[in-house]
Length: 290
Image 1 (cartoon, rainbow, N blue to C red):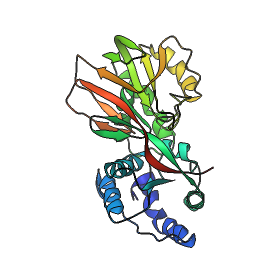
Image 2: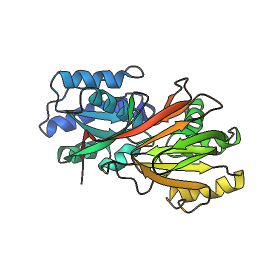
Image 3: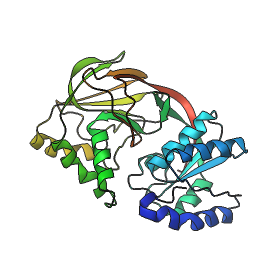
């Protein structure tokens, strides 16, 4: 559990979540994350101690860490999600989105385990999306104003991030697509949404063995603002500046500057200019409520 998730909602939900699981007959050990990366450590420790299920109580960052901890141990334990964060994109894939903690627990107890794919880049997994360009800039803008809550905390920083952003030169290489040029963003998706509100890959399926890639070329500010509602509704696929394709592996190269990435909304600056992104099919066991 991330006690800071949802501006302290995680801390307030700790005892109710534990009681709800125990009322359903589960034996529970509750662990609080204390620093970045701690969720991965705790998840790996839980697996080594014999846990069958590891539940991430928090936002997408908590899910990212817990999933990486489970995958480091072979993905044998099953991941569940009680969403307490803001965007909760992964919770949309597993049937606990927009449910209060007690209801999310009840749905998890009756959920069915499914094998989800996991993306991998630079020796780290992502379970929803990774990207470069405008996406990481929006994440950075959110961190500058941590007081905002709800989906507005994802929507409000976007125009500001756009105004301070310049298209970057990127080479994209995949068996299906090979392109070079200036881009606004590259988003590689295992799930359908990013940033809580943006359906960048409306046809993505986390069990199909493919990554759904969304490339966005140069846009003027008026065109960008006009496009935002279309992206939120998943209706951007016909725009001339947008390219969508599916692949099992692609290489991204930014010749003019080192990569700045986000993985499930977590910023990474690896000081390299090229990376290969791949999918590992059926890598993660996940509780999915119907």
